[in-house]
Amino acid sequence: MKVDFYTSQREYKEKKAEFDSAIQSVIEKGSFILGNKVAEFEKAVAEYTGAKYAIGVASGTDALVLASDILGFKDGKEVITSPFTFLASASCIIRHRGKPVFVDIDEETFGIDVNKIEEKINNNTVGILPIHLFNQMSDMDKIMEISQNHNLKVLEDAAEAFGMRWKGRGETLRHSGTIGDFGVYSFFPTKTLGGYGDGGMIVTNSEELATLAKSYRVHGAAKKYHYDYIGYNSRLDALQAAVLSVKLKYIDEAINKREEVAKLYIESLSECSYIKIPKVKGDQKHVYYVFNIIAEKRDELVQYLANNGVGYSIYYPKPLHMQKAFSYLGYKEGDFPIAEKVSKEILALPIYPEITKEEVEYVCETVKNFYKGK
Ligand SMILES: *Cc1c(COP(=O)(O)O)cnc(C)c1O
Image (cartoon, rainbow, N blue to C red; front, side, top):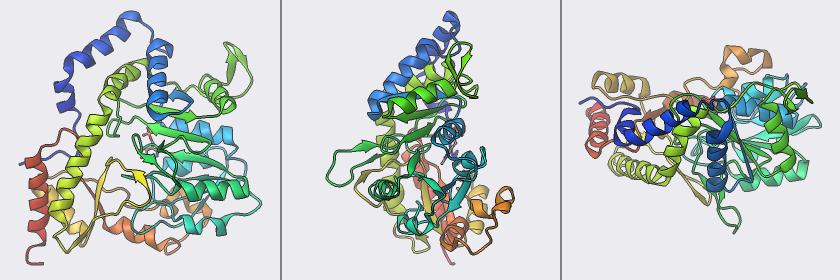
């Protein structure tokens, strides 16, 4: 058997007529830049997430860059974040010469260790950039409490976190991205809400920040050809908005299916003593964008999976503080031992709504077979 780590083709086949007609209608109308399709999708995301404002941009990476620029994560100012994430969570700070200050992660959730944030705050600190990674949100109660005590801006990297919600202290559920000053989503194809190409979104509850974000995505124009800022050319493509609008209709179903797949993995793999399954912490509604395990002899295991037709991925094999591009920050191996350890043991198994039970069982059997006799 061969199991893809991810495929968009099954979903497309299931809903081909809907996707085709959504794409065709954009082409027929010829409204490619912003326009109705983007506005409709923004409205739908605002409704789904409860954000007051949603601004579609070209990618999750751009969403982070625009938001960082607007929040003043630049010119030597420090922003506290995690070294165990995708590059874009930290490069957005550096894009305008801000300085990412890393804090190690929680060993059980892989999110930023909120108990280590305060010791890194100084007069130069302007923000915190938590990442809601893989399947769960960071502790937003603690992060908002710290930010309020120290007057810091919070930019939530919710690129992976569409559908995740945080309950907080006796409050109602709040969608990822809508708790800090700005939140961003990525619509990269593999993401829980993924398009047929690049796409991203910025959300906020602040009218002032929303106005700035809308202006920054069209070169900093307040109205056409009148520029108040040096902005960007970064819009969510209308074709992507059309595809994503179709997908958003079915997002709860897709999230539930991911949950069922995760349950199958947990049931089957918990009995294997060579594997640890990450915990979900805090009062929250998690979403399995990625299903990770912590595996002994990980690098041998992935070879075995590849030989047996099982797709996999490693998020992330090298923490950011050890990347060449960040070497000028002066970090060294050993600075963030938990992130470093996890990067050597973590392994993502295939998960998407259309994966079959038989395929998940095959993945589990293959993993268990590898450890037989070890
Ligand atoms: C995917 C991702 C991004 C970037 O999103 P793109 O749309 O690919 O630019 C940023 N941060 C995290 C944590 C991500 O997983």
